Length: 132
Image 1 (tube, rainbow, N blue to C red):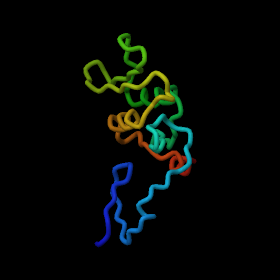
Image 2 (cartoon, rainbow, N blue to C red; image 1 turned 120 degrees about the vertical axis):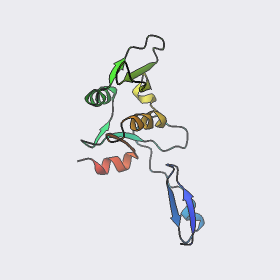
Image 3 (cartoon, rainbow, N blue to C red; image 1 turned 90 degrees about the vertical axis):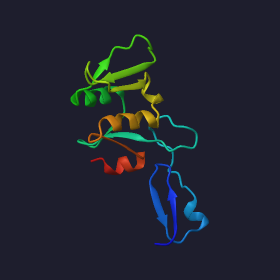
Image 4 (tube, rainbow, N blue to C red; image 1 turned 135 degrees about the vertical axis):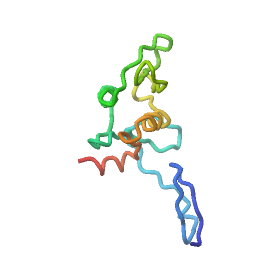
């Protein structure tokens, strides 16, 4: 295989067999409703896989996390955070900003990491095509 391997913004590599300048240019999709992101970063959405549901609020997220055994953790030390934990004996903790609109990609990936078979982070345009 000849060509150039390129790392995408999502960390996935792809092979470009006949590289040109255009093939290296990143074409960003139009900015859609999603999470807060760094300047220039693509917005992402969190998808609950069993129902292919795009999570759009903390009410929806909390409902899905509760189904998986997560409960809201009382956090009086930092009122700007919402936290969820699995049980008192578990070290797993998900910490999120109080406002859903302030979620960043690393928050979404933290949820996915701790619930691998149930959540996925997607590009908003891809998530819309997958929804029924």
